[in-house]
Length: 148
Image 1 (cartoon, helix red, strand yellow):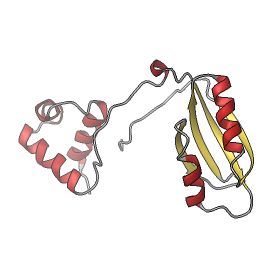
Image 2 (cartoon, rainbow, N blue to C red):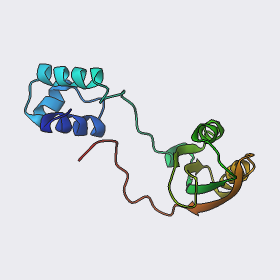
Image 3 (cartoon, one colour):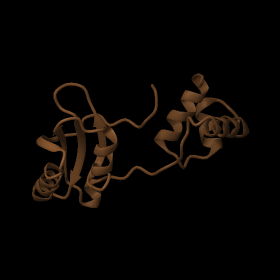
């Protein structure tokens, strides 16, 4: 369980995972050793799973983004869906959802032709009956995985 100070530390780490404990401490009014103890505890508790870098997909040549709804034939298990979509490096996220659609995947591609190829490959998976794609025009809000 995290408290308000832990949440403030998490927000600071989400903004800059390379910040020093002293820099974070200055933001949350704690000493560097106190911040380190809290970070270590949150790592031990599984709250913090790791530290990473946030990349700009467009700067790396991934200019096109879409959400692809996948409708499955019959009863397809989440494990089968996961095994299929994990093989696509273009798939950023994949989630089973409620409603008529079974699976929604977020896809990044170099351009529209590349996106079309990815959607065609997804549609060719043996359990897929049909797909529906929505291309992203502008990403308005993107938040790190941190509670407010």
